[in-house]
Image: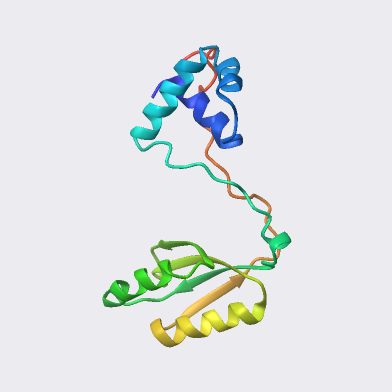
Length: 154
């Protein structure tokens, strides 16, 4: 991946709907060259999808929380398929520490969150929950360095 690919990735992370023409202007190469590079990045598994960012509160989801779950290794076989089936779980990661899983969830109300936590506790065991009051940095991509075609390699 060269500095032009890095520039394309940075631009697409800011605006996945950027046109080939706009990307071409920013990268100083032709639109067909941009399309070929994007295709190459997709085939290599570097670009894995294009997404819309939704204001969850405007569609009725007012409670975001992080739930940590203390699982025994034998429980993962049941936990993973179950948690993947719950649309309110927007991310789940296996982590180090006292709790083996941490989920980010979103629900319309604290009552709905509480109901979900009770199910998790009954099926899988101990949890710890942190409700989000505000978000200072929304989910974002990583800025790749030396992304401008005119920048010098270090």
